Amino acid sequence: MFNADHLNASFGGAGGGVGLAAFSDNLGSDTVAGKIFLYIAPVGAVAFAILMSWIFVKLEQREIRNQNAKAIATVETELGSQGISLERKQELQQILKSLKDERIAHRL
Image (cartoon, rainbow, N blue to C red; front, side):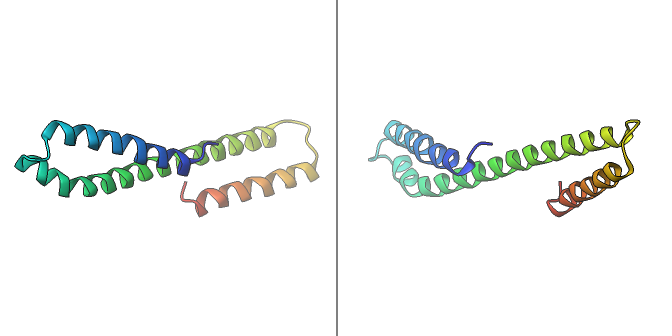
């Protein structure tokens, strides 16, 4: 699983900084638009960081949801198979219950 914090820091710091510097250079610091941009740029950087954080949270939730769904499908498949012992069936039902509880707890 990837580390969203490190990725978020690199996108926010490097990409945002380079993009803002390039745009600022094109506007020129002596023009009215350049001066307005000088004050608005930090707000844009914060908004960009918030957006990237939200995207990475959603991607991580999707990954957890997919792993949970695969685990549930695997347990249900094994539960449906012929010839499993009653003890194993009870164990699988407990695992299935905990997976579904995790799904509810994390709002997956």
